[in-house]
Image (tube, rainbow, N blue to C red; front, top):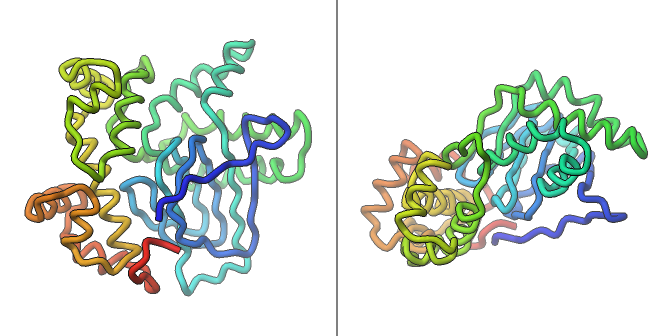
Length: 289
């Protein structure tokens, strides 16, 4: 089940920090409108961000974009007694307001964040270097705590991070019509949806929308729709025992042969092979836990 998580923003802050010690990462498929930056230490398992599925190791730093479905899942045999998970939630709107109100040093970071579509996974070197700053988020107060957060965020764009998901944005940043179209696709990708419907949601014409996707994302509306559907199919293959035909249908594919072709093109293997490699040991007829 995909859950919309409510992130606590205590005391009127536009960012929020939390930490967990000595616990495993449960499979909980969820999303929220904030960016999420997660540092995981002394654990191992599988990270799911949108349609990206990758193993994570003893030190993992990853950024999840707003409204992108994601979860971490610890290996069943992992010793979680030393696990430490530190998470920061923040909004681009907050950082943009700070830049407008006298912190132009944030402009480069904001442009970089505007180009994040599903997320990014950072190098181990950066993760190790930022551990002390993450610890300050735990212990510092006042401006010292805010300074630690800004130090962390400032380091992200310079890293050789692996970007996840759909295309790349242009240097000019985001476009409200593109954002509206992506939001529409995310809400309706499991059902029948036409280019005209997506264009209406973005308050533009189909031809203009196709041009915007090509210029801003380097891809097409159809390709984005397929990525979302394949990502959902990966989630069902991992977390349920549903038969393949049901997974195809619930992911928005009415033609099973077309589903197999697109899955192979996106993931480089058959749905059955993907399930064998990634299936959760206790997955049953439900969709997560």
